[in-house]
Amino acid sequence: MNETTRVNESQATAITLSEPEKNVIIAGVLLSMLLAALDQTIVAPAMPTIGRALGHADYLPWIVTGYLLTATAMAPLYGKISDVYGRRPTIFGAIIIFLAGSLISALAPNMLVLILGRAVQGLGGGGLFALAQIVIGDLVPPRERARYAAWISGTWAVACIAGPLMGGTFAEHLHWSVIFWVNIPLGIAALVIINNPLKKLPVVGRAHSIDGAGAALLVTATALLLLALNWGGSRYAWLSPEIVALLGCSVAFWALFALRLRRAAEPLISLDVLANPIVRYGTLAMFLGQTANVGLAVYIPVYGQSFHGLSASSSGIVMLGLLLGTVAGATTSGRTIPRFTHYKRLAIGGGAFSVVCLAALAFLSGHTTLFTLELLTFGVGFGSGMTFPVATISVQNAVDQAHLGVATGVLTFLRSLGGALGVAMLGAIALSNGLPLGGEHIQVVGNTVAEALPFTYIFIACAAATALSLVFFHLMPEKPLRGRAENEIAAIVE
Image (cartoon, rainbow, N blue to C red; front, side):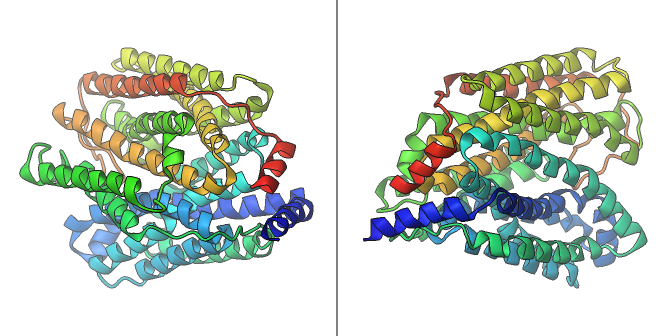
């Protein structure tokens, strides 16, 4: 009887969800993703103003770190929660938590409350990244899903370009709190848009539970690691007792988490998912690709300011090549994947092209023109943009619908962790070569360098990380992508 009910639910879902309704849902979840993405870029230009208004400027980095810690740690939890309780209540909860954090931040009377508000924002924002891709995975079969990669990349591009402009404008002409107030109408709009359509998504009733102990171990291990990556080389030396202790404790909690995965009756992340070679190599490839991509995005403006003598505002222009290239690469890959039997070759070809462009950047770093810089960064972005849809679609296609949320959550988690590692890795190279640090909370003002050798090392490091991601793409098995009919059959059988 229960199986019949579930079959009927799956069939009804396939009938009642029209293409326009699917597009409305996707637009709504991408709007929620835009909220979280904007809050990673909109704060940076306003931080000097916030420091003057609230005092305790030495705690300003925690406005970024507090958000990063909770957002990264929560990503895999949301995947599991959405598999157990359904997508609609989970994404509603994430948006509401995010808006609560925005309200706390906007009303913050002091720095401590603002940092607390940012941490609460991260609790919700970490789920919005994963849930947008999970919901798209529910609605669209893998063979057609890649074409939405351009929408996701476009959302990030809008956040990267509009965020700093909005943050600077609000802080200079209005009030710093507006950067948080603006989330309220956007969040409410997202809730209104997706409310009714999401009701039509099936909620598969299963006797599942959330492994609270495993979740606590994962969050603790991640937080300790991110603190070490953020503080290492800047606040403390990498070999200082503080950083060594943080890394040691993180390793211990990761070991306890691994032990919990093996012994829990229903672990937070299914061992079947982790044992899948497509998931394993696909997530590692994404991790390394994001290490290079985010690290480069942080240090390209530093290169423009430190070597080419651009102003802080003008240096943002050099990011256009990387951003536009990433969107163009994701769009090309997304439109091409359904036509390729061996779609993995798109990622390998794109990654190889990105390595070549990074090698050219390293070779020409001492005498490149701004035009050449834009051209090469566009090439880097185009190549890396080709890889991201392949990794996402491959991982989602490798698991059944019951584990879609968990697999996507793990992918999102490692993608965020890779970005944090990239910034820390390149930060260590920068400091060892006398460069100013780059990042959301550190401004490079009036610092120029006579030689480009430090940036040569940075570009080589990015090329090495990208090349290593190609190794994992090569090792990743290739599974034929499910189409619409196969997807519906899988849902019915499940």
